[in-house]
Structure formats: C-alpha cells, structure tokens
Length: 157
Length: 217
View 1: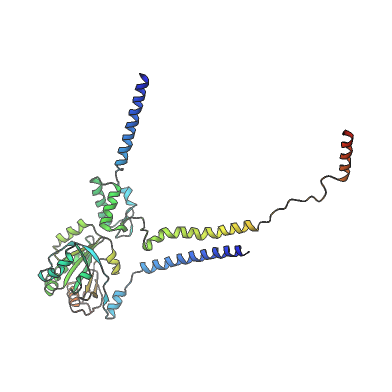
View 2: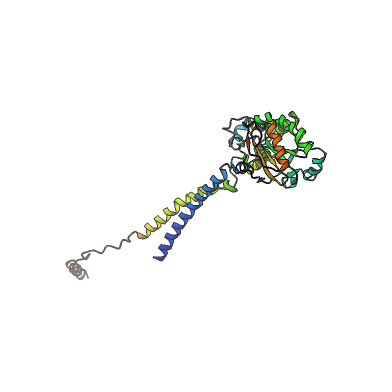
C-alpha cells in the first residue's frame, strides 16, 4: 500500500509540475518600462528611449506605461509601437537597406582580418623545414665492439 | 607553386573585395544620410521639382468641400491616399506632429488659409501627421478644429523622400505633381497664401524659412 501511495504522490507532483510549467509558458513575464526602454527607439530623437529626454520620448514612455497597465506583454507593446511609428522604432536595425550593414560589416571585417591570418599560418606551416632523422656521424657499434660481441656469442654458444 | 600562387591571389582578392564592400557601404551611407537641399536649390533657380510619390493611410477625412470632395472620394474610398490619385488637383502638403511647438503656432494660420484661400479656389490642403502617436494626433485635430484632410505617415518615409529636416514644413504641389514652393518651419499667413497661389498657377516660388515672414519670391 505504501508503494502505491508513494507512486500516486509522485505522479501527482509530476502532473502539478507539468501544469505549472505549461501555465508559465502560456503567460509571458509581465512587461516593464526599464526592460523595454533599451530595446526601442525614440523615433524623433533618433536614440534609444532609455537615454532620450524629449517631450516625444516622455509621450512614448506614457504610451508604454498605459499598455503595461492594460496587461500587454513585451511583444505586444513592441508590436503596438511598430503600428504607431513603423519598424524604425525597434532598436535592432532592420536587415534591409543601409541598416543591413550592421549585420554585414562585422562578419566582413572578421573575414578581412582572419583570412590573411589563416593564409599566413598555412604558408608558414608549408615553409617550415622538415627535420630529417639525424644520421650518426660515427657508427653506433664500433668494429671492436662487434668483434667482442662475436667472441662472447661464440663462447656462450 | 601554382597552387600557392592561386591561394595568394584568392587571399588578396578577398581582402580587396571586402575592403571595397566596406568602402562602398560607407559611401552609400554618407550619400543616403546626408540631407539634400536639391528641392530648394531647384526652386531658387525657378525650376519646379517632381514631388516624391507617397501612399499613406487617412487619419481624418475632414471637410474638403463639395468640389474637392468629388475629386477626393475615389482616393479616400480605400482609406489610403497616394499622390498619383491627387493628380490634377493643386495642393499644399503640410507635415506636422502634435509634439511640435511650431506646428501648434501655425495651426490657426493653416485653418484660416484653408477656409479663406485654398478651399474656395479648389486648392487642397492636406496635413501629413508624422512621427506621432495616433491618439495625440487626433486630439490635436480636435483641439485646433482642423477640418482639412489629414493623412498619417507612421514612420518618416514621406519626410525622408521630401528631404524634410524638421517640423513643420509645407510644400506647394501643382496640378502636375511638381513642387513649386517650400516653407520651412512655422508658416505665416502671407507665405501660405502665396504657396496656395503657386500651387494653383504652377509657377515656382523660392523656398522660405520660418524667419522669413515675407512672401515667397
């Protein structure tokens, strides 16, 4: 009986954990102004909202606070901002037009630096002299030693 | 040896190609980001400039009057208006935002010129709200009792295409879709009246800044 109770309790705990996880996934964390401020722009000032200090930035913050009060999550607030100001309101540059440079330049610059380095390393590797096995200047076993060895073998044999 | 040579050429080629790409991007960026005054330069020389096209949603239809309403109705039907749809109608395009102090200062002038000079001569006045919150823009329209049609550019595409450097700015566009006058900053009554005349007769007038309270030459 105790095994059955234990198994049932374990199953109940697992089910409860599963349900809690499911509930957690369904409701995203509540949005906050400080969290959003560095991810969106003040379109008029052309700088992130976190550092913008203009009347329009104040209005944008008020708009975000209003949406937070209404229970909007972060993604919904971002979507609402895009509806109001267009995609330029998002701090991440768009992957089109000149803004695409933000995504293209870093790999291009890395390529510019790494490729010559790689070529240099490969070339150095090829040029490095291969060390031949050292040939002893004198024979390893001298004639006298050979003779002594033959004598020893004969005596023992 | 040939393999080593081809590897070297590939390395140099990639380095040169990447450098050219970076230099090209820099050049393109400078070209795109640099404010252009080609519209004002052309107007100064007495030449009209084809207005950049736009296609934006309507924020408020306003009360354009019987004659203009008839012309506007097809354009307004889908809730969007493009410059192409307005071909044949001279117009003043005023770019504004509710947060902009000089826009508040010129709001009464615009409404006065609309009711006294523009609408009676079938010259359309169109407000283009930009970089603004919809709710704030609608409040602005109510507060200043603006009853000319207002469009909304939620980003700043139209502003960029018109090379707008600040708000407000007003462009007079003749019936052929050419910019014939440009007012930078808060417009005076006289400037607006002259802009209406320029749009109507299609004769280019020089650009005027807000400091110039005189007529558009």
